[in-house]
Image (cartoon, rainbow, N blue to C red; front, side, top):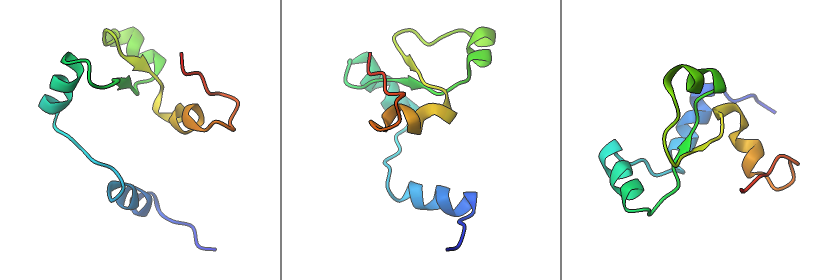
Length: 76
Protein backbone atom coordinates (compact mmCIF):
# COMPACT_ATOMS: atom_id res chain seq x y z
CA UNK A 1 0.00 0.00 0.00
CA UNK A 2 1.38 3.37 -0.96
CA UNK A 3 0.79 6.47 1.12
CA UNK A 4 -0.68 9.39 -0.79
CA UNK A 5 0.78 12.84 -0.37
CA UNK A 6 -1.35 15.71 0.89
CA UNK A 7 -1.09 17.26 -2.58
CA UNK A 8 -2.46 14.07 -4.17
CA UNK A 9 -5.32 13.88 -1.68
CA UNK A 10 -6.28 17.51 -2.32
CA UNK A 11 -6.05 17.02 -6.08
CA UNK A 12 -8.33 13.96 -5.91
CA UNK A 13 -10.80 15.80 -3.68
CA UNK A 14 -10.97 18.74 -6.09
CA UNK A 15 -12.27 16.35 -8.77
CA UNK A 16 -15.12 15.32 -6.46
CA UNK A 17 -16.35 18.69 -5.19
CA UNK A 18 -17.93 21.75 -6.73
CA UNK A 19 -16.47 25.10 -5.81
CA UNK A 20 -18.38 28.37 -6.02
CA UNK A 21 -17.41 32.01 -5.74
CA UNK A 22 -17.79 33.94 -2.51
CA UNK A 23 -20.44 36.07 -4.22
CA UNK A 24 -22.46 32.96 -5.12
CA UNK A 25 -22.04 31.58 -1.62
CA UNK A 26 -23.20 34.86 -0.09
CA UNK A 27 -26.25 34.94 -2.39
CA UNK A 28 -27.22 31.36 -1.46
CA UNK A 29 -26.78 32.19 2.22
CA UNK A 30 -28.84 35.38 2.00
CA UNK A 31 -31.62 33.48 0.20
CA UNK A 32 -31.53 30.80 2.93
CA UNK A 33 -30.63 28.14 0.34
CA UNK A 34 -27.62 26.66 2.08
CA UNK A 35 -25.96 25.99 5.40
CA UNK A 36 -22.81 27.96 6.07
CA UNK A 37 -20.17 25.97 7.94
CA UNK A 38 -17.43 28.06 9.53
CA UNK A 39 -14.32 25.86 9.70
CA UNK A 40 -12.22 28.18 11.87
CA UNK A 41 -10.82 26.98 15.18
CA UNK A 42 -12.28 28.22 18.47
CA UNK A 43 -9.32 30.52 19.10
CA UNK A 44 -9.90 32.20 15.73
CA UNK A 45 -13.57 32.75 16.55
CA UNK A 46 -12.60 34.31 19.87
CA UNK A 47 -10.29 36.75 18.07
CA UNK A 48 -12.47 37.66 15.10
CA UNK A 49 -16.04 36.83 16.11
CA UNK A 50 -18.61 34.44 14.72
CA UNK A 51 -20.49 34.52 11.45
CA UNK A 52 -24.15 35.02 12.30
CA UNK A 53 -26.34 31.99 11.55
CA UNK A 54 -23.36 29.80 10.65
CA UNK A 55 -22.46 26.40 12.07
CA UNK A 56 -18.95 26.12 13.50
CA UNK A 57 -17.19 22.82 12.86
CA UNK A 58 -13.40 23.22 13.07
CA UNK A 59 -11.65 21.85 9.98
CA UNK A 60 -10.01 19.02 11.90
CA UNK A 61 -13.42 17.75 13.05
CA UNK A 62 -15.44 17.78 9.82
CA UNK A 63 -14.90 14.14 8.90
CA UNK A 64 -15.91 13.03 12.40
CA UNK A 65 -19.03 15.22 12.45
CA UNK A 66 -20.36 13.75 9.22
CA UNK A 67 -19.43 10.10 9.87
CA UNK A 68 -22.47 8.46 11.49
CA UNK A 69 -20.19 5.81 13.01
CA UNK A 70 -17.80 8.23 14.69
CA UNK A 71 -19.81 8.89 17.84
CA UNK A 72 -19.34 12.64 17.32
CA UNK A 73 -22.33 13.29 15.08
CA UNK A 74 -24.42 16.25 16.26
CA UNK A 75 -26.89 17.52 13.71
CA UNK A 76 -28.40 20.16 15.99
